[in-house]
Image (tube, rainbow, N blue to C red; front, side, top):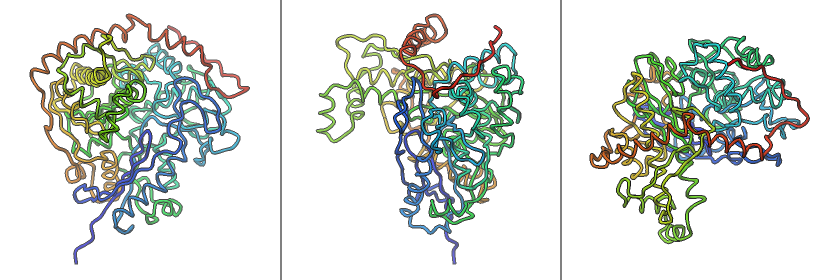
Amino acid sequence: MAALPLYTIGIDYGTESGRAAVIRTSDGFALAEAVTPYAHGVMDRRLPDGTPLGREWALQHPQDYLDVLQQAVPAALAASGISPDQVVGIGIDFTACTVLPTQRDGTPLCFLPEYAGRPHAWVKLWKHHAAQPQADRINALAEARNEPWLARYGGKISSEWLFAKALQVLEEDPDVYAHAGRFIEAADWVIWQLTGVETRNACTAGYKAMVQGGEYPPADYFAALNPAFADVVNEKLSRDLSPLGGLAGHLTEQAAQWTGLLPGTAVAVANVDAHVTAPAAGVTGPGQLVAIMGTSTCHVLISETLADVPGMCGVVDGGIVPGQYGYEAGQSGVGDIFAWLVKHLVPPEYVDRAREAGVSLHSILEQDAAQQRPGEHGLMALDWWNGNRSVLVDANLSGVIVGLTLATRAPDIYRALIEATAYGTRIIIENFEASGVPVHELVIAGGLKKNRMLMQIYADVTGRPLSVLDVEQGPALGSAMHAAVAAGVYPDIGAAAAVMGRVQRGVYTPNPNHQAVYDRLYAEYLTLHDYFGRGLNDVMKRLKQLAGEAVPPASAPDTVSAAPLEVAR
């Protein structure tokens, strides 16, 4: 009698929802999937009790993550029709850096009534940018001290990352900081809830918490930022890091009840959404840049060589696959930018057309914009609606559209914004190659791969063929592959990727005529990019400063901020 097929479950925690997929280990086929939208969404204006938030805040509710385990996982399992004993492992991926303060037993501080009204007690989502002042000081001090790890992050630490966010908590609500036994990535927190064991994955530690060669920056560096920050690593983090594909533990009785799986099911070490997607597309070797395109875009690239790449988000040995260097870059706003246009700037006539046709506004705008030739709309945009992650690493930058006239229409702006994000990807590619890290192919994953006009524009702008991840839930597939490794189905992620990875090669190729026009337009993009982004004109930052002065920042009541030390310049 033939043995029953084996399955793993991959859970992808995104910005707005969590997705669970039941994956067959023999070929990567998705048998069933389910999605749970976050009930609290992204909290960027106020807490659930009405407490207002300041500008550039982005928080989440950890209960939403548990809801995914209790709703999406059992729903996917039920839809698959398989029995729980056929599921040999479970793995998750998460947006990063998404971090929360907890007690030492893992209880989120925001679950405690006395902290429910304190903004700093909640999850800080990856796109929380209110810690930019702390990030600026982190960078200035590292430069002044010639810290060797700084070059591994392109010369700048982002406000999105762990230490900037933790330092903001210390300086704006010292009481929350004092009562936080742990600052932990949401990915690792979910694994903690599944297994009852605290682990720290090497991926987020390397890319988001400045760990290089297994070591954090020294305590005297943190003390120089703020004396009360000196012991942040020993008191709030962990020096024990777990490798990707490793076994974090096994499902507890409680977690088994949540998920409908069996107690003792293997649980993989947590991972980042972008990094699990590379092997999902069969990418485990050098030269293929994987762009995971959704609300933002994360670019990951594997190389056999170590190089310092200005403006990258980090390079970590084994950060994507063991034995090779994993590079990361990204764009902080992509799908979010298109959604902003659709939500706020589309006239009623387009809304009526979409309703009559029974399609989305995006479809109507794409339909009209696709009729244009490159350059026809006369616009040029900078894709910085949510700041710039790479290569400038500056959350204080903002969006620009040049060339608007009374004849400009919504589809013109829609196409110009898509082109701007393609130019942003091209500058990232050229930055890698100029630093000695070659890129010969783009592999696209994420929801935006469905937009055919966007995909062709990316091929034309970058001058490279585009391959496409051949599944809807790429990160969930990647997480399920890591679960298969943790469960012992495959010896390593390379072996799993060879069998379970799914990709269509060369789906889009550059149009030479369009490419020639986009080369000319890209030169204009670079002019604007450097003028506004490299300090020649700081008008964006001055405008943000004025806006910030008009809105008081969110902070805990009746607290006194710890005084930071001045950084010598």
